Image 1: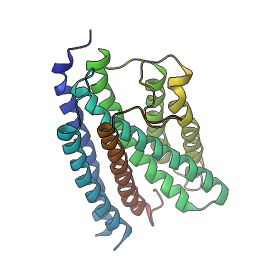
Image 2 (image 1 turned 90 degrees about the horizontal axis):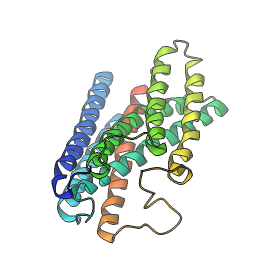
Image 3 (image 1 turned 60 degrees about the vertical axis):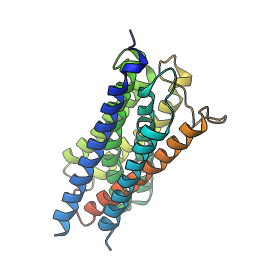
Length: 39
Length: 218
């Protein structure tokens, strides 16, 4: 049974947080790898 | 400035623009009446899906060019694009269920679109596992290229799956023959997000490609 639309803001926040975490994590991983290679 | 540094600055710029997309989507884009706030997941999920498919498209094209021209730069580019595509696929496969749970009432269903996108994710993973498993540097790019071309062949089936099969997944609202079926403020947010995710792809690939330069195990 789908939940009432007024209560689904938590899913939206979770999606925005998860996306930011994944993209920032990969950014840091890449930055560290490239720095290690060029140092 | 090296390629890695240019990629890093491109990525940082794209991340700032992504922050702007967050503000625009959450604060200034209207709430859809039927789906409520969960609909706003769509401004991240759809561009992430676009970037994942763009990544696999370039993996496939670079793989074809590598097999034709035997130029290692294409193989290196394919490897870079595959790794970046895996990241966007992770975003797509986490935001999708977070949208589906409140709207469909389930996290996941084995319909054609979802199953094919999961296959795309496994192809990305398989591509990289294969590259790590084949130790012969002359065979590795050729084997990987075959997987890359399989991924390219999968893409039209993913896009057309909502037409070809009975599926729960919404129909395309932008990438379709007729005009986009979305109110202007939502469409602008979505198109801006497409641009930012594409720029993020470019920044990531530049850095990842630079990592492979001079290495034999790219």
